[in-house]
Length: 306
Ligand SMILES: NC(=O)c1ccc[n+]([C@@H]2O[C@H](COP(=O)([O-])OP(=O)(O)OC[C@H]3O[C@@H](n4cnc5c(N)ncnc54)[C@H](O)[C@@H]3O)[C@@H](O)[C@H]2O)c1
Image 1 (cartoon, protein in one colour):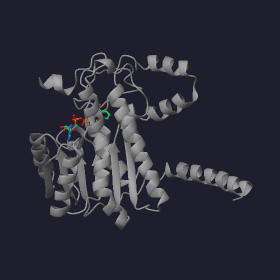
Image 2 (cartoon, rainbow, N blue to C red):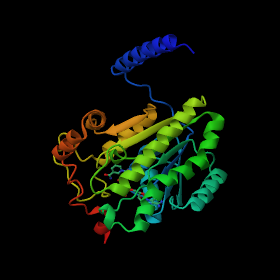
Image 3 (spheres, rainbow, N blue to C red):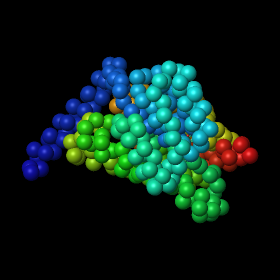
């Protein structure tokens, strides 16, 4: 260990990686071939999960769809078949229940094979102020949105590590990067999802398993129904995202091994600013962007269905 040598090496690599990243801005990224991959999507019974299933259906992959909602799964499988998917399997699975995740994962491994692309996408939100949220709902949100990821990784990551081949995708949220008034338990669950996915990604790098790729997706509100009622103050700066656009961005991110996908791009700026400005200025910016009233008109999916 030599402080001067290592510091020089770090500075040179810093310059190299920035130049590399700059040049890559002008070169279309190479898309990887997904033929023969086994893709598992949790929360595939609606929204982004369904749209990703439809995107994958056009490729030569085996699709494994999980959701707690069996009717939603059947509909996704039907639409994926219509798009040309030929190897589509669906399983009702409550991802918040560790025993169920392990049981259904074993069934998938026995009947279909080792999953090579795992997309943790299932999610719920209750939209209540923290002190008004029943304890059971808080626990459920954490179990579905983050703890379930531990069990799916435990079930499917060993085979990826053994072959040094695979891809782990975590559909988290911008609420996993920046706290939001009125979304405390949801933010906690998504910060946990981001921290977990990022840490395992680093473990894989440390172990030299560079064939197992990772992608963390952090979108702002998407127009799927999950956050029905929520508005945005400045739609040009922070637009409510179109579900098809998000699904296509995630797909492209997987095909190009993109590590972070923040949507819209304004989030890269807001996250950097949050870390460097005084707290009062963060609050000032939050007010400017309407962050204190995002959840005021929240209706969400449940109320809509009732
Ligand atoms: N909609 C948004 O504004 C938004 C924004 C950022 C991030 N996200 C995240 O994107 C992901 C997809 O959300 P979406 O907008 O498509 O919502 P969605 O409600 O359409 O889809 C979520 C799916 O998860 C399933 N699910 C819920 N609990 C489950 C459980 N215990 N086990 C298995 N499946 C379960 C639901 O049945 C549903 O099909 C979620 O993780 C969500 O938190 C959504």
